[in-house]
Amino acid sequence: MLLDDLYDIVEPITADLGYILWGIEVVGSGKVTIRIFIDHENGVSVDDCQTVSREVSAIFDVEDPVSGEYVLEVSSPGMNRQIFNITQAQALVGFNVKAVTLAPVESQTKFKGLLKQVDGNNVILELENNKVVSFDFDELKKLRVSPDFS
Image (cartoon, rainbow, N blue to C red; front, side, top):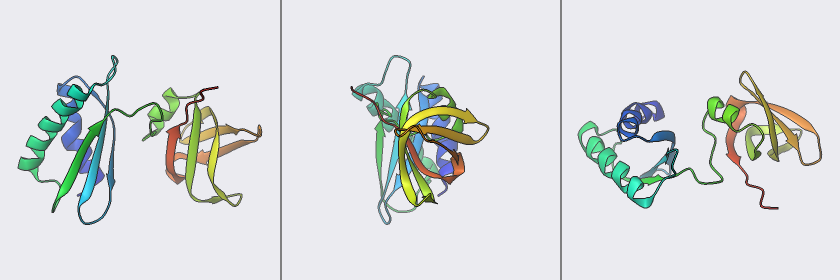
């Protein structure tokens, strides 16, 4: 099972139901968990998640994209949403984010700051100490919004 295959199956379903497919995450080994994140301009309710889950489950039963057992979870991306692609990052310029890199940069892998700019495939953060750092999006293990409640 490839993540791209899951997107190919799930995206048309969510679009037909009027939702935006925010992202898909597959975690675990053996019995994997497939997490589908949906969004909507009016927000996402539990009923929305149940609707998408039922439709996706029905298609998964036919398409069988996962070998073996799996758990399917459908939810909204939430306030601290993961940023799955560069287009999402562009839309979230000006938000506080947390970034985790695949390899250490200046001997660290975790960064927190303001998403200052997106230039091509580069994500530019202004850290809390006012230092500016740039990462290629593909070098990030995870990038997520970090709401500031102050």
